[in-house]
Image: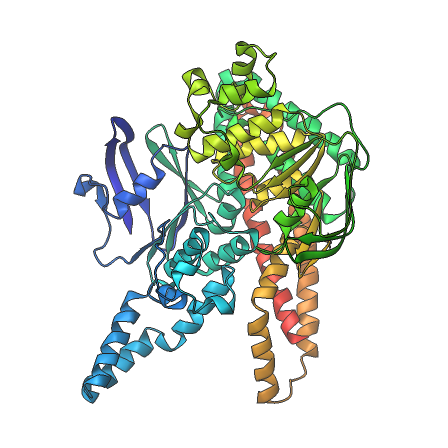
Length: 621
């Protein structure tokens, strides 16, 4: 369907692609990954013919329908729902022709036009557009608002809905999770799974990639290599490949030993709660893929202060908000060592809670008490906006401690990949990711005993996200985290709290449970509609025999999943053995990797079958 043959591209004197060949077939869903500056967005521009290359190096059918997510949408008077519907250009064109034929009373052509309109699913288009908007977080009251009434972030969501509305054979999505909260990301990943066309996806969100893709195209050293499997499987294969390089062996073992010791400490304290078990699995995965990141430019830790208070902060019967409370009667305590993740829809009050704990937002009623020795490290969504753009990274750190020598400051900033002349450049020259890295450096330098982090992965690439995840894992203080990055949440959090409908309460489950919770909410209207229809159509038939068969099938799947997961755990532990990566074991290593991939695919297939049968059982009951 889409082929690159001996592709070469030089931009700004830098060679991005040198003799690259790659083929993407119908229905393949491919993740395009690689360090910043390796040419991911440029490859999209080549496909869209915005960058000219030798025509013989790129080929795809002339009638191939390509949809592409643009990052900016102008604020105009156009109605939001109409804007989303305009994604289906053919349907809009037919609607205009129908309107003209009706005005002209041209009834002969009108019949033909209505047939075409029906073949394009025109009668269900409005409902489809509304479902897309709701899935991405819009309310029904937003449908008829003009674009100019929405912020830039919400206009990007509208543009995403418009892109999803467009019939396409190939969809190009460049960072579609930008400006999305976790709820919308979970819905989007579920939508992409049902998309029938081919997909090329650029994203720094590991779990989102895992949900959406079955191939990885890795851009590295001016080339592109295609891997079969999702992003997690790619990391394992890449880790194995990197481990075969003997010069990296000592550095790898140090990283693996570091992760293993942390996992052992955590396992000793972990309960049997699903959140804790999910975190154990996430940490074991981190250990396994550590070699894939040994050449990362980022390597830092977040140190905590020696003095501590217990509890660190307490809210008692607190009302939180601005002129009116968003959250009421909040009872919440953070103690040393707590690792808490906040879940809930956009606008529910997650950021409000953090601001109230920090003290930047006064509580409306109730009590807020902080420990004598509390030292807060606060990363807000707008942290980068608070940096002094006129001074350098060096000056930001020096202001925190003027006793530090230039060498000490340079060494410290080097862990955040600020080296050479970069440490003295004014911040106004920094990219969004560089500003975010500096904000982390400032927080870490101050040695907090509680980290309050509101969407810390915004603007960060994959390697920096990995470094941040490792740093948060090994931080010994308390953590309160809001993030749409499920990998970070899974790797860092022990307990989840849900904020919704003005309340704060513990969420008894892990992120898989939360995903089901969100998808159930978004499909509740459809279920209610089906329920009403079934009542209208007549009494429900006796489903006892079907229920019995489904219960038996689910029980068998439970046992199969237990066996498969046991084997998968054994395979993962074997792959973590350093002796496996010696020259003499290369054949065993490849066998183990193949076995691990096969088991992973079997687990995913069994889990999908389990979910399908459980959903069918739920309907029958």
